[in-house]
Length: 503
Image 1 (cartoon, rainbow, N blue to C red):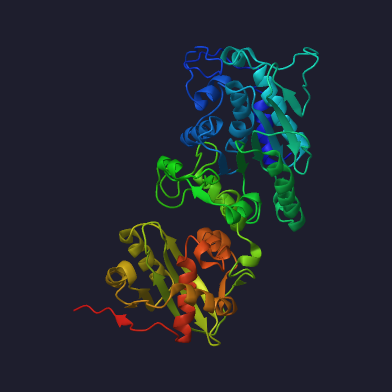
Image 2: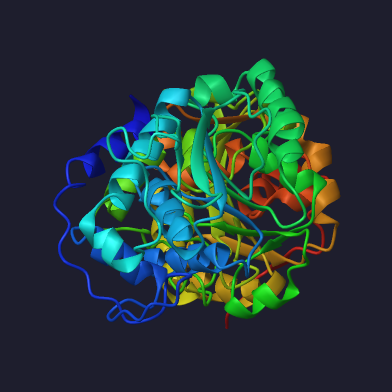
C-alpha cells in the first residue's frame, strides 16, 4: 500500500465518528452566521475531532487556508512521510474549499487512480455528514440516485445546483474537457523505484505540462504536496524553471508574485537557525511524539542518502555528487603506519559544524580515518571533545584552521593536551576551488572505517550527498576537512603554520 495509502487508511476508520460542530464566522458563501470556527485548522479539528494538530500543523493549515481563500495561488510543500500532509491537503482542504465556494472545480492527482479515488471518497463522506451540512448547507452532493442529473462516482462528484465539484485522477490520466480551478498534486511518485526511473519522471513532466497546465486558466490555483524522492522530481524541475520563494517568515507572502511559487520544506530533523515559520532549534524532530529524534537518527544511520531525500527534503542526483563513486573502507589498519595526525576546522557560522578528523598514514601515503568529532556544539564543549579524541587515538600532531576563532580554539586544545603539538594556520585559498580540484585525490587516497556510516552518520550524509554544484550545498565543513588533510599530506597549501607556544 505504501506510506501514503497507510496514512489514508488510518483516517478512514474515523470518518463516521465526527462530533457536533459549532461555528463562529461566515465560512459559507451564503453568509449564514455560525459560531466556533474561524480558521481552517479549527474546521479540521471539528470535522475530525480526533486529529492531532502539532505546532507545525498550525502553520501548515494556515498556509492551506491562505490557499483556499486565494491569497496564495501556487503553493509547494515537501514534508516527511507520516506527518499528516495528505489529510490536510487532499481530504480536508477540498471539502473546505467546496464549502466556501461550491462553484469551485477541484482536481486531485496522485500516482495511481485508486489512491486519488480514496481521497475523493473521503471528501464525499465529509460533505454528506451532518456536521459539514451545519457549516455549509448549500454544498450538497447526490444521495442514492437523487438528483439523477448530478454525477457521483468514485472519481467524480458534483455539487448540486452549482458548477463546482471534485475530480480525481491518477498520474498520466486524462482530463479532456474539464476546466480546473484548483489542482492538488499529492505524491506523484509511488516510491524510490518510480522516482529513480528517468522514463517515469519524464512521463510525469510531460503529463504535467500537457494535461495539468492545459486545464488551467488565469485564476487557477496549484498545490503540490510531496515527500521528496529525487532531485529531478516535479518539485525539483519546477524549482529549476520557475521563480520560487522559500517561506521563512509570514512577511515573505508579500514578496510572492502572481506567477511565483511559495515553497516550504518541513524537515524531519531541523537544520539551520529557528525561523518564524519553523521555530525549532537545530536537531529537533518535527513531530517528536510520532517520530522521535532517536528514531529519525536510527533511520539516518540505515541509509543517510535516502534520509536526506525523504525526511529532510534534500534529494541529491547521483550523477551530480562530487564523491559519487563512494569512499574506500577498511576493517583493520595496516602494520606500516608511519604517523598519526589530526586536522580540525572550527565552525565558520552559527549553525555550521566543527569538523575534526584524526587519521593515520601508511608508508605509501594512504590516509586512514581513525576518529571524528562532527558537532555544532559551542566551542567550550567541542574543545574538550577534540582533546579527548586526540588522547584516545594517540595523536601527536594537530593542525587547526585559525579562521573565525580557530586560534583561540587551538590554544584551548593545547592546554588540555600539552603533549600534542598543536599548530594553527589561516586558510586563505578559495574553498570551492580547493574542494573541487582535490576531490579525485580524496577518493583515491582516503580510507574510512567500514562502519563509518553508522558511527558518524551526519558526516557520512554530508560527504555522500555533497554536490559538484558548490552553491547548492548547505554544509561544506566535512568536504573542507578531507580536502585539507589531502593538502597537508601532499604539502600543497597549508602555509603559514604557527605552533602554539606557552611560557
